[in-house]
Length: 283
Image (cartoon, rainbow, N blue to C red; front, side):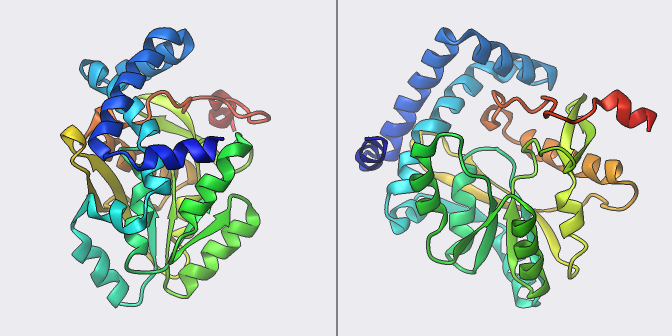
């Protein structure tokens, strides 16, 4: 039933989907107190409280655009996306070096991998959804031509490492809360967040280029701008320093279009079995 609904919605024009998404965003915000508190609280704590109204609408668009991104024909999706600074990516690929693409939950993050895979093989780390009904939709969309999936476990890390050694690009979502033993506590918008250490580890395999990428929604459902930004931070120092550098890079991207970040995500939760940040400082 869910697959049928998504395929049905994918036939609608993107402006219509974004209009419906904005309405859904407000409906959920008004009817779900815990969701409302988290979205507003995270937004205000990060210093972007003035973007609240737009963030409410954008959060709904992020959901309702998924049928289009996952189920529409790739050429139709690609027609709605333009790129900024792809020549930088092309130059790295031409040099034979691998690339670590870091994509936060900003804008339409699902479309970034699809755009990259139009030109080159890309392997992305993938964590199956908790809702089993979504699994065939997500895996079908993310496993299209040139786009390959690596599980979010040690087996997947080995796959990503092999890709980098071959000079191939890989992609990960660095702002997901990792599991026990896979992260450290590091500042993120002035609060302490359990942050994955994988990006820095991968950046040491085969001397790849680290590139930040995100897809900003254009107003009125006019598509997306997929942007590629050089990572200018340092991945030296302690593991905590490296995680902080990645978080700082994410903060800089998010500040470009703060209303389009996934503020309702519980980024500051403490994973089961993970000691709190005070224990890390004491150690």
